[in-house]
Image 1 (cartoon, rainbow, N blue to C red):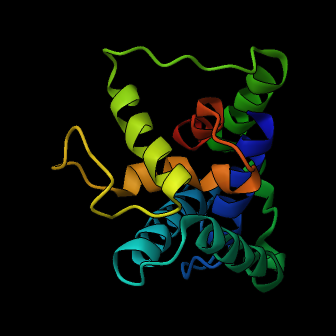
Image 2 (tube, rainbow, N blue to C red):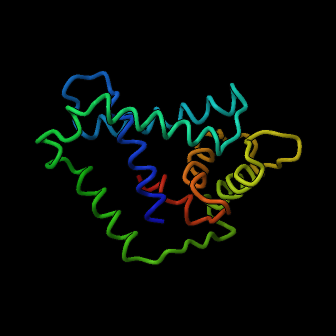
Length: 167
C-alpha cells in the first residue's frame, strides 16, 4: 500500500506544481493536483477510450513534468506549517507500519467502488458491454482514481486502491 500511496501522492504533488496561483499554499496545490488527476483520468476513458494502464503511465509522466516546471515551488517555507504536510506524513507512517492488507466487506460503500474498479483494471477499460455495474448512476471518476495505482502492478489487489482515498 505504501508504494501506491507514494505513487498517488507524487502524482498529485506534481500536478499541483502546475497550479497557476502564485505562491499558492500546499493545500491549494494538492487540491489542484488532485482535481487535475481525476479530470485527466476521466478524459482518457470517457473521451479518448484509452487503456487504463497505458493512460495511467502517461498521466504519471505529465505529473513528473510538473516537478521540472515548478521546481521553484517544490518546498515553500510555509508548507512545513501546513496541516496537509503533517497528515501526509502521518498517513505514510500508518501505511508503513500498519497492515498491508485491506479486506472490503459486502455492505460498505467502498466495496461497490472496488467492484467497479476491479472490473475496470482487469478489462483495462472503464466501459464496455461486458462490464456490469451495480450502481450505474455513479460517476466513474472515483473508480478510475482507485484504479490509477494498480497500473504499477500486473495483478489486482484491493489494498492498492485504498491510498487514493487517503491522499
